[in-house]
Amino acid sequence: MQARRLSPEELNAYEQQGYLIYGRVLTDDELTELRQYVDNLIASLPPGKRPESLDHPHFDDPYLMKWCQHPRILDVVEQIIGPNIVLFSSHFIAKPGGDGLPVPWHQDATYWPLSPMKVVTVWLAVDDSDVENGCMKVIPGSHRWGAVEHHEVDDPSRYVLNLETDVDESQAVDIILRAGEMSLHDAWILHGSHANHSPRRRCGYTMRYMPTEVKLDRQKWPHWKLWLVRGEDREGNNRYENV
Image (cartoon, rainbow, N blue to C red; front, side, top):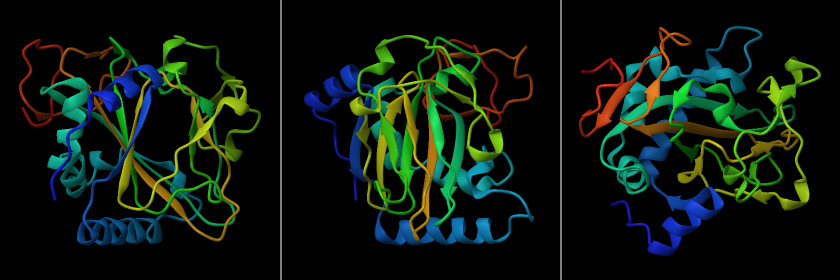
């Protein structure tokens, strides 16, 4: 299985709309392996820790670099941000069936001390993700609006994130994915998802990549870990765990 080339129409759609549904990127065997890992990870969580809160798990488990550096995934990312690729972050968002928490409407860029804000997020579906179990929703073209005002959620225990913004949900598009498929979205696009009241889990693994020209503000995040996962760093803006 090889990563397919994005068409000029797809690249233009990503630039104009801020997101793209790519389709299948994992083989059946790869999907089975990743899902087994996720099942075991969730089963081993300490009491009280929600499975939606598995942020940057690759910091502590080198096995996950297998997926963060997956050649087919990077082949697609390279078509969007170029050949010199930095792994900025990753996050398992696993909404259990019945009481999976919603993700409030937000822009990822609100949280990140990066300049310039050139980040593409891969949303890799570990499970089927659809309207019933709380798939991601986006507001097409909102990445062109710049920063929008966010405010604290009313009760952080009821959401995955602590900031939200108001949107007109009639403009929203559902990002429906089968397990093993992926989508990509821009750091500025407005997105969120509803609670999962279905009997099925909805797990996605987000992997976030930036070109080497992007600089992490170490005064704000002095201990954050970065990996150079493809190409070379010609700018010298950052330090890496593997270089």
